[in-house]
Image 1 (tube, rainbow, N blue to C red):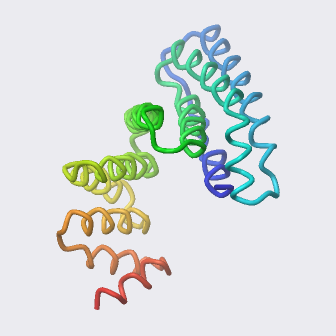
Image 2 (cartoon, helix red, strand yellow):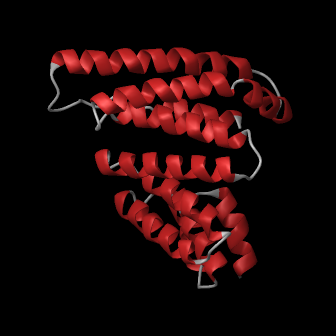
Image 3 (spheres, rainbow, N blue to C red):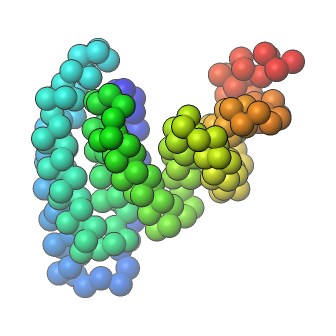
Amino acid sequence: MKKLLLLFLYSSLFVPICCVSQSTFKKANDYLELAKDHEKQVIDDYSGIGFEEQKERIRKDREQSWKAVEYYTKAIDIDPGFVEAYVGRAFNYDFLLAGINPSNEADELRKLLLSDYLSLHKYDPDEVLWPCRIGVTFMAYGRVESKWYKSSIKYFDIAVEIDPNYSNAYMFRANAKKLLGIEYCSDYKKCCDLGNSIGCLIYKKCQ
């Protein structure tokens, strides 16, 4: 969980914002900073503690995360192409999702998370992380209806096209293919060839 939080924080992208006035840009950034203030209160709560304690604190910190979501949404309303705001909002959706059991609320959060990943892929099409996260989210839907595994493979294909050397894209795609019941060992092999030790361990089981 801690690694997931850090991944989202360090994956925040500072990209130029086009076609917005300076005053609009400033107002969107003001909301961004307000969102980060609430987000920081949550993240500071998780330094140096175990996973189970993290889950308990997630439940207590939901209010701060929803407040961060509110301000990220205001920033996005002003500038629909504001990549960093989508990154932050997705981080908080994922954070909220991790703290609840499967339910209607979890399904709704997953839809919101998927929507932000799709927007990130639209506005930041050269980043390999977004199609991978879309694919992983579709895999979660696949547990209910297997057709979603095909959708996940489609986005892992896109990830491989963006960065043929990103080993995790091959691993994710192999997982989806395995669940769909089609040939998958070649992707684990490619993952291994790229130096991914987990991919190598799984590929050995294919042989």
